[in-house]
Image (cartoon, rainbow, N blue to C red; front, side, top):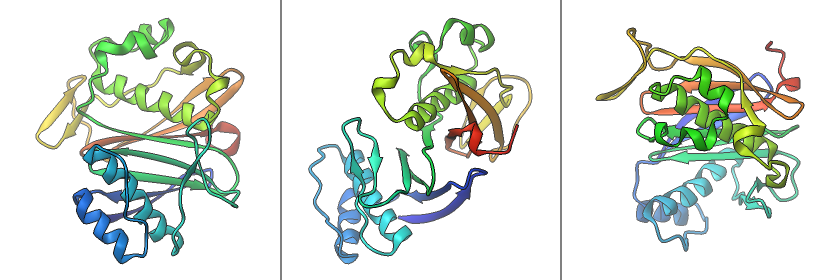
Length: 232
């Protein structure tokens, strides 16, 4: 398991990254070595890796065992702490975002996720007009952006329609994302990995700042209420 450093966001959020390269059994051994709980009831190997990886990353961040708790909405929180936390993981990659003052959200996905066939489920009619039905990268950005905003909102009961209430504003997508040995095609040019896209979204009367980062294997999108960042 390799600590992959931090990303600092303009609202003061710090994103901590780890690459999950070990098996669940190896991560359990690492937890034992760090005096962390090495037990995990999850049946799927991938989920066991995520849970054990979270314990190790939190120990790395805080220096002491720091469990991640969950409320009734499955929203993560830290006991006896005002620090806000958001967690995201996909195959081989874990991100924990921390902000001392306000809520925010982060989502990550692999490029391989199939989103074009489910666009009607998460894009409203207006979004479908400006998002080309063949633009897979744009749909993946939109998917992670809506997930990140949803995590920022936190209370599931506030969102009666994920599709229609979480609204993305038009953005210009990179024309092609190079993803290891494969490509996601969206146009005629190539955009190097490591590209950043700044865009916005809305939930009811609240605007959200969105920051999408394209890595060689993943898409990461961060969301924060726009009032907490000076970026226009």
